[in-house]
Amino acid sequence: MTSEASTVLRLICKTQSYDWGKVGSESQVAQLASSTAGFTPRDDAPYAELWMGTHPSGASVSVESQEPLKSLLTQQNLGPKMHAKYEGDLPFLFKILSIGKALSIQAHPDKALAKELFAKRPDLYKDDNHKPEMAVAITPFEAFVGFRPLHEIATNIKAYPEFASLIGQETAQKFLTQVSSSGTSTTPEDVQNNKAALKAVFQALMECSQEALTQHLRSLIGRIEAEGKYEEQGSLPELVVRLNRQFPDDVGIFCALLLNYVKLQPGEGIFLAANEPHAYLSGDCVECMAASDNVVRSGLTPKFKDVSTLVRMLTYNYTSPEAQILRGDPYDDCKRTVLYDPPIEEFSILRTNLKAEESEVVKAIAGPSVVIVTEGSGKIKYTENGAHREQSADKGYVFFVAAGLDVELEAKGEDFVSYRAFCA
Image 1 (cartoon, helix red, strand yellow):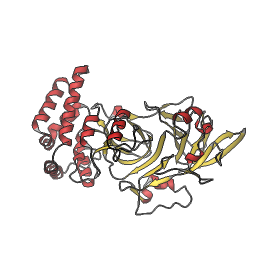
Image 2 (cartoon, rainbow, N blue to C red):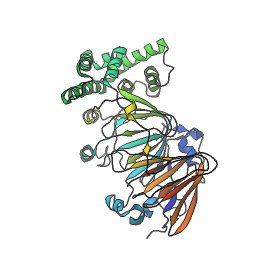
Image 3 (cartoon, helix red, strand yellow):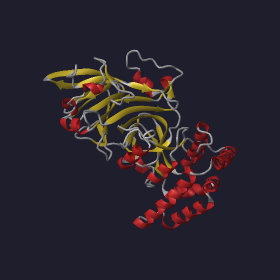
Image 4 (cartoon, rainbow, N blue to C red):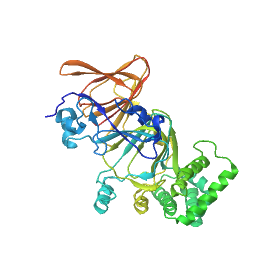
């Protein structure tokens, strides 16, 4: 028996300090965490992540009782189906990220590969679960996600001879020939050959020697700086120069020529499926993921780069950056709430955006959810044991919401934005 039976619990959530985080009050993580009594951000500390959930490395606790959230989860407030399926725990970890410096270029294994990696290298891969992720911007947000369309990569190979020299002229020319002959074809055979050519380019980059990498990258940086055309944020020259300043002589810098660059506005999102390359570059977002720590890294990091695993695991799908962006779909009969619904079972996200004095009722969800207010102030209203209840819901407030509960969100005298991760 738990000491709390409340269906809506306000939570204290843990911040994580990594060197890539934004510093002090510039960080949305720090701003949101400041709603918790006793938290004062340091001006010289990076605040990278706010964790909302039951992960043991940063478990949330009840404001009222100080008990860990996991100890308060029951068959009733998780819902019988979710309680049985996920063994009495949340199936997702919800986060806020504040990124001042690029995160590593990485991919997450699917379930089959996760089991294989965990069995072979449990020192590196800590569990046997997959780790799909979704991010929704709360400030302007930059990321790499998936491989560029083939014709864009071909254009970059031609425009950046340093890259062609690094991967080898033979590999570069085979790719250009393949794209010229079949780059727009959708027949299964041509798509397979296109992916093989792309894999050869990526593998040649990932397996290049540090000596060759340093030589060609410094040559490229010198040429870009001499030309002086790297002021436009998000342009290839600007990205190459910026990433080299953050990670000098790192192989991941050349990935800017291969991966889609996206700049998201608040409310726009991306889904990061298994076996797809990606990297967050800057900005603030809400992020939700399955409960796993499995990451295979390839660049923009001093950490271990598992090149052989990464090269063989990627799908080598290629598509436009616009195709990667999610803007939310209408949800139920709500007017001010949209749904981001990835093709997985562990989580989805709702975004509710209210103008001053507006309110919205979100009908009961079959499974548990976690809500964070990222902008404004208001109330969260619900009925518990036949009685009407309400709690203040100001910027930075985080709530666990039980399964099967209608919830009304109400804005006070300013715009109000909340995000809600759930599993149904």
